[in-house]
Amino acid sequence: MSHHLLSVDSLSRDDVDHLMRVAARMEPIAQRRQVTRVLEGAVLGNLFFEASTRTRVSFNAAFCRLGGSVCDTTGFTFSSMAKGESLYDTSRVMSGYCDAIVMRHPELGSVAEFAAATHVPVINGGDGPGEHPSQALLDLYTIDKEFTRLGKQLAGAHVLMTGDLKYGRTVHSLIKLLSLYAPMRITLVAPPGLEMPSQLIDLVTSRGHRVEQRDSLAQDYTDVDVVYTTRIQKERFTAEMSEGFCLSRDFTVDRAFLDTRCGRDTLVMHPLPRDSRPEANDLDVDLNGDPRLAVFRQTDNGIPVRMAIFATLLEVDQLIEQELRPVRWFVPPRLGVDDPTL
Ligand code: NCD
Image (cartoon, rainbow, N blue to C red; front, top):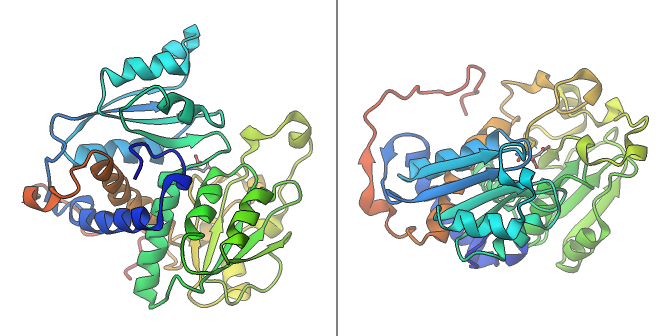
């Protein structure tokens, strides 16, 4: 595996399987039953030049749960990029301070440019409409874990992706990652103008997967195993696109859609955040507490998966078991008030 994680393109099927296995071994630590100090003394640089809650905090928490410490900077205003500093200079400077760097930036290719100037491992936390590889890894980990619980297989599964498939970087990384696995059926449902880029469809089709494109959710999807819905990335729209754009209510994934259009155990995933403003027509809150809604299990899985990425890139993945100690503080048996018991 390359010493940076910039795109799913650099991952082989073996690399992904390895990360999935290491993530499973991180579960006792992520679930706060055991602690480790394998990264004691290591420092993570978390550089976020675009809005983030879960990616920034979960990378931070994952590094801390491995025993490391985190230094971070958020937004352009408080960094030297506001004074015109280049990605090259920032990268070299940060390399003197940190043992690993996570960066999110609004421009496509910016994280790769930053990584080209350093030998310190760099992880792409999202580069504009480009990629978000760690999100795809945690999405795959979630699908695999949920399928094991439901007695389903990834091979031959039917995955539906909907919402903003043009600018949504999570679906770009996820479709590539899924394409490394045994052939499945992928249905893409996007409003006009927000379809999945054709080169990604070509790639997935060339690897033997069956891809179908539709423009409405108001149809039957009874054999769909996973509905992966996404937020409309209005911040990436051009002025012409923003003018008068309104997502039709038909794109809302809600209880009625699941009950009438999908199967009994269809899972609902979303990278989050969901846009809760009514006119956004994003994933509805009426599914909260419903066991089919996997979004918070998905966010929880961000911790073991990001721990696995750090442990692998920093080459301590073989040391985890030797370092484990029991947790001594109070941990609630359930985390969220609406969490279903599965
Ligand atoms: C996404 C992102 O930033 O790409 N969120 C995330 O990292 N989980 C999705 C989004 O912003 O809509």
